[in-house]
Image (cartoon, rainbow, N blue to C red; front, side, top):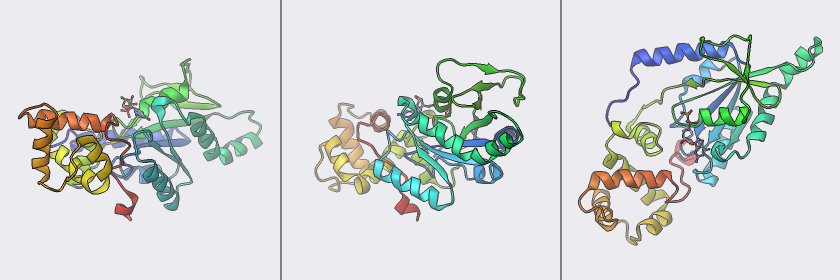
Length: 282
Ligand code: GDP
């Protein structure tokens, strides 16, 4: 796996920015990719968001294996997270449920403020997560079409604003960016397969081989249907990739086909697949 663009300097800057942002909000909406809820999570957020209401959104649920997503919701609940939701922000489903969840998470605080005479206190939220998990999409869904910048509230920098969302919610217009955590190569492969890191910084064939191996074991039927290869174990996985390169009309262009395979995986051509499995992480 090639080296990634997150150098310690960047990490520190991002971390400090998140700390600053969190100072300003009531609710942290942590966004992860539902296909890889652990691999797309930066565990630091648990620590940073400790004193805040903390929601976990398993986004891109439309791409993930629904059975696994259900297990992940339970997994996070068992860890003590009260507010967990699976979402398909791209197609706008369940966004109302997310709004309801935000309100539930802040109900106690709202009640307290209302007891002091405020009519409808504002709830302030921010989306945080690694690149490409769907933070901006969720933000746009929360805000809706009529983007209204809310004045005279502190942002973090001059270029940040609070946007009026549904309910009495205001969302910071700039999501908090966390860096992906590559503790092991497998996590890197999963992030790459799901498009969380740029295609230009990893070798597509390594990731494609990882993906084929994973699918051979865990999604055999889907892989058979996609490849039309019945005996997937008749040859090694690199040999299989080579065979598929030819079969799909890419001659000897192994690297090109590897990337095509990843793109097809991301576009659901192999079906709804999760690369992090709860059972594997128990
Ligand atoms: P950010 O970098 O975290 O702000 O991610 P974006 O909001 O820019 O989304 C990255 C890509 O994922 C875009 O192409 C979105 O259209 C896509 N995307 C976001 N949410 C979803 C989702 O729930 N389902 C699907 N299929 N795609 C999504």
